[in-house]
Length: 495
Image (cartoon, rainbow, N blue to C red; front, side, top):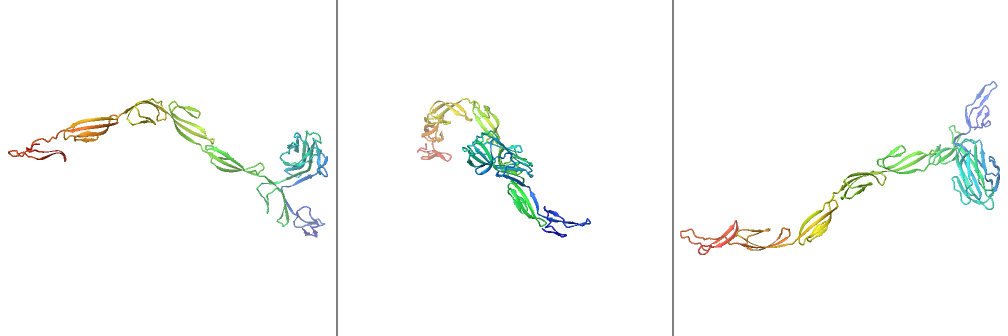
C-alpha cells in the first residue's frame, strides 16, 4: 500500500506493525499538518493461541537436559544409555497455554525383569508409572509398541516404544522428569530416548459433531488454521484458529423396571409410566452426554382363590399351616419383584359320620354308588366322597327281591266291573297281567273271572183280561247306550 502526503511516501516509511496511522509534518514554528487516518497492514484475529513446539533428536545438542550422554544405536543418535538415573528436561518462558503434550521414542535395552519402576512427572506431579519385562510387550495407555531391535549388549534385545501423553499444564516453566531405579548393571538393563517433542498451546474447543463457523469456513476437526478474509476497508484480514475437538461421550442406554406404585427418578423427573425417555447432561469435558432410558412399569397383581380341605387336613399359605375355615391374605413378591396381594378363602369340611343305607333292588338290577356296583343280597362297606371331595364311610344292607307269580279266582255279579292294574273287566274269562309288587319288582298275575247269571228273569204277557203270554219276544238290557244282556221269551211268555 502506498499513501502520499507532503511528499512522504508510506511505501518508503513503512510501518512494522499493521494498524491505523496518520502522517504528521512539523513546521519550524512548531505547528504541524496532519493527514487523514489510514489503515495499514493486515488485521489478524486469533481463536486460541498458536502452539509452541520444541523437538530434539539429539543429533546436535542436549540443551535443556540435566544429563548429556549420547550414544549411537540402530543408526540413530540417542540420549543415554541410562541405568538407575534421574533424567530431567527444563523449558522456561512458555507462551500462555492450558495443556502440554510430551512425545518421545523409548528404548528398553536387554533383560528387564518387571521390577524396575519408571516414574514420569511434570513440575513434580507424577502422571505415569511403568515396569517392563523382557519376555513380553508392555501394554499401557499412552505407550505404543514399535517392534524389537537388537540388544545394546551382545546377548540381549531392545524393545522400542513411542510414548505420547497430553496433560493439563499452564505454568510458564516446564520441568519434565523420568526417574528409574532398582535396575541391575548397565549392560544388563539400560534405556535411552530419542525424538523428544513438547507441544503446548491454548486451544479453542468444540465438541465432536459440532461446527465452528468462521465466516464461510466451517471447522470440524482439530488443528491449526490460518483463514484469509477481506475486512470492511478492503484490506486482507487473517484469522488464526487453534482448534481442539473434544470427544463426545457415547450415549448411555439404561434399562430399568419399577413397580406400579413407585416412581423412577431420572434427572429431575419422577417417572411412573412405561416408555423411552432421554435427557442430556454435560460431561467432564463440557460436551453433552445423552442418556436414554427404557422404563418398564410392572403391574401389581391382586389374586383371590377358594380352596376346600377335608377335616384333619392342612394347607401351607405364606409359611403358615392353616386348618380352619376363613379368609387369609398375604403380600407376596411376583416374578418381576413387585408385591402381589393374594386372598385365600379356605373351607374346611366337618368331621363325617358313617352312613347306613338299607336298599332293595329287583333281581337282575344293579345298584351303582359312585362307580361301585352291587347286585347281590348282602351287607357291604364302601368309602365314598362327600360334597367336599372328602372320604365318607357307607354301610349298605342290600336285599335283592325276586319276581312274584300270583293266580286269582274271582266272581262278580252280572253288570259289575273288575279292576286289576289298569284293566277293567266285566266278562267271564282268564286274564294275565304284569304288575309291580310291593318291592317294586315284576309281579305276574293270572285272573280267573266268573260273571254270575243274567238278572233278566220274569214273564211277559199282554195287558188283556185273559193275560195272553207274549211268546218269542227279544228283550235287551242296556246301560246307557251300551247293551249288557239279552233274552227271548218262551211260548208261555217266560224268560
